[in-house]
Structure formats: C-alpha cells, structure tokens
Image (cartoon, rainbow, N blue to C red; front, side):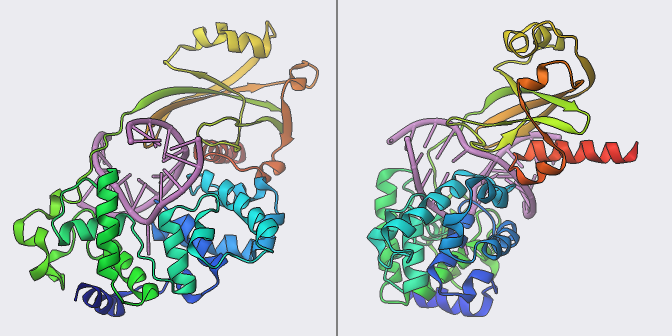
Amino acid sequence: MLSNQIINWYNQHKRDLPWRQTKDAYLIWISEIMLQQTKVASVIEYYLRFIDRFPTIGDLAMAEEQEVLKMWQGLGYYSRARNLHTASKTIQSQHNGVFPVNYPDILELKGIGTYTAAAISAFAFNLPYAVLDGNVFRILSRYYGVKTPIDSSVGKKIFQKLASETMGKASPEIYNQAIIEFGALQCTPKSPKCDICPLLKSCTASQSGLVALLPKKTKQIKLKNRYFYYLFLSCNDSLAIVKREGNDIWRNLYQFPLIEKSESISMEELLQSKEWIDCFGNSELVIQSIYKNKVHKLTHQNIHISFIHITISNDTGIKEKFKFISWEEWENYPVPKPIESFIKLFLKKESES
DNA sequence: CATGCGTGGAA
DNA sequence: TTTCCAAGCAT
C-alpha cells in the first residue's frame, strides 16, 4: 500500500524540525504560513525568532503590524505576515483567543487556504484531511502518471480525490508529514533520487521515463520591467523615509522617497521630470553620488533600482516634505531586501571612511 | 480564474 | 550567468 511505503520511508529519513516537536495549533499555524512557497532552511531561523517574540496568539494580536512585518523582513510574500496578524485578532475577538479546532473554522481565517487548513487540522488535531501541496501534486502525478495540469481547476479536483484516496485510513498526522517530506527530500522537482527510491518499481513515471515531464503545468509567467529611482535624502544624522501603500509589492514596508518610471531614463530626464519638480522645485541640491541600476529580479518583474544620494542642510525647507528619522530608528522599520542591502552597503562605506 | 506577490538556493 | 521554482493565497 502506497501510504505505508511512504510512512516507512519517513520513519527512516525524517528530519528533526522545530515545528514537529509541538501540537500547539498556533505554533503549527505559524510554521505552515512561513513554509508557503519557502524552503525549510530559510524558515527555521525566522520561525524560532517569531515564536520567541510572539509565543501565543495574544502576543501576536497585541503587537503593532510594523513589528510583525519587521520580524518577517527578508522572508518575502509579506501579505502572509499581515494576514497572520489580522487572523490573530480574529481569533481573539471571535474565538475567545483559542485557535479554532475544526477545518471549516480554520479555513475561514485570513491567509489560510485549503492546504494550510488541512495541514493544521491534521498536524494539530489529527483530523482526516489529506494535504495537497506542491509535493503531493508532484508525487501523485509521477506515481500515477497523471498528465492533467496541476494548475487547472480540473487538475485540482482530480488530485484532491487522489490525495484523499492515497491517505486512506492512515494516520493523517503522520501520513501528511510523510508525503510532504518525501517530496522535499526524495521525489524532488529537479533530479529526483529515483535510483534509491523505494517506489521505483510501481512508479508509472519512472517506468515510462516521464519523471522529468511531470507534474505538468500550463501557466507561463511573463516579466515586467519597472524602474525605481530612490531618493536617498540624508541630513546630518537623519534620512527620509516613506511607507509603501496600495496593492503592490512590499505593501506597508518602508523605503526612501521614490520616483517610479516604466522605462529607463537618464539622470537629466529624471531631474526635469514632473515628479522631481514636485519634490524639489528649483531648489539647489547637492547630489553626492548615484548607485546605478541594480536589477532586482522577482518572479513576475524585474525592478531596476538606482539610488540618488542627496545631502540636505537643515534650513532648505525640503525637510518639511518628508518624514526624517535617525539611523538608529531604522532598526524598527521593516524594509524590502534592496533597501536593506543598500543601507548595509552605505553604512559599511561610512565606517570605512 | 488569471495574475501578482519575494527571496534564495540548486542545477 | 541564467533559469527555475519552493510546505499557497487573495483578489
């Protein structure tokens, strides 16, 4: 039986991961959110720091969003942190501070979809829900030779049914951990270890040479180019800061004042642009240096980023236009990766000179 | 329902 | 160096 084979493999190969040492639904929830589209190796340190600062739902619910985002800084997909925070407040107000104990109630929480609801139901409460994530899609499509695209609505139905049948009457808690671990370590996306696979003989894909072609996907991602011109305004020991708003990347994180263009422009064009005039009018500015056009590559977009360092004196009036904070205060503000990198670079140069 | 959301590591 | 994509979800 497939479920038993996978569980046997798991008992021999499972890793000792922090979130496997608890049955606290809150802690399992945090780990599952962090693990979405994110590798175990990246998650561990964030997980330990996060639960140290927010040991209970109440601790998380009482915190400021800014601090929650700060704890998430560098992990990516920041809506996960915002939704986590929102959901913690929902649990406080609608569930008496107790994490819901059944699948439908869990599924209603912000940021929790079918996968995460099934995972928490199984890992915290041993409820019979079969998880369906990237690992399960991959294993089942290969083992049973299913060529239906996993990112189609039909595919999701087929694989969900297959996942439930495969779990059968096995322990949801153990089986779900086992199949995910099997996908992460054994039946990997690239270069799966078929030569040492216990399922080799019964795996449809391996027997028919389809392993590299499965699972099948239909979606194709297209790339957009964006051009960010950050205005790095420093005044003695303070610098300008702006919070990102709207439905866009890095929502609610902090950065420098920004002029964004859809195309690359020269410094002359930038100095004459409407946005520049809006910021500074005809003020005389001292441009110290320019850090040019590093490309930040993301899944759906390439962001070309330049930093224009401008020093400002206390009496120019430009200080009134933006919020200025000290270098020490920066530690409290969640920032996107390119901003973090730039700040580190700048501070390093400062200390050297 | 197609699209956008981050980052880092492996090949 | 470039490409791929990971324990998904909201809109």
